[in-house]
Image (cartoon, rainbow, N blue to C red; front, side, top):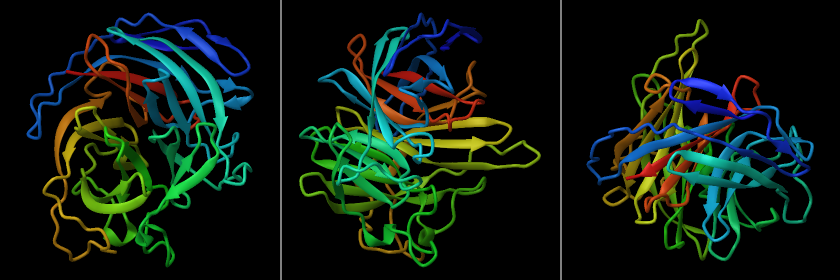
Length: 373
């Protein structure tokens, strides 16, 4: 079934038609929440919510459970979205989905999953169970894609049919060693990828600090993530900057408290503005999504520095653009992990956010549409 939101109430449509490789659902959304986010110091980026729609957990495509959507990208030439699942080959093959999402001034009017694409190794074999943990996907010039794997870690180039054909070379100090005293921490790898509008550069941001760079965010302080810049034609790293992750915005209210915060997606707008999404979760409270406008100019290039401990540097500049949370809105905000630039509506670009439902019956695959004013 498809859940829609109309103001503060909930209603449910009948189940969409399921076929071997697709399901289709037509929605009538009347949600149009305008948010006055104010002018940012770095520019004039303003976002407003057009609408949101959710798919419940448990849906299956060709016998494989649909969900775990941690990455999203859009191809304006085909008008199709690519959604990457972070299933660690436990419920099905490593995979991405091709989708069509029709957007108008009221939000999403139609959504269809057109096919599932298994991801494969360079030799054409399927990935083994727990061998990969896909997180973000972006299209590359020339028709291939790049997706990030938190397990290795790796940035893998693949065809649109999912076959690995190459990789982007990571600095050695990003790769875990010495019992994870160096490199990305478990499940805190390169969650965010973004391609510059000219297609010449790729950035990759870790979810939180490398093990040797200091602690993860707390309620009292943030953390220093790494932002890599790659030259797309050569697939080589050309620069690295420090991205200061915010401290955890809300404390857990659960008897067994848990809270965290980290970077889960990044996106270049067509005019060159860079947006970075931070996702925080506090048990008993819910999810808080913060979107920032970021500029690299003036930041210290730390490429080659294995550790930031004791080093002097200037992080990238950032300014808040929007905050989404159940506290501020009439609907729950789920575990948002992906962000894609969508089609224009009324002459203005849209951004589509997607949530990772963790394959939990208590969560859902949520799509939120924002418009850039």
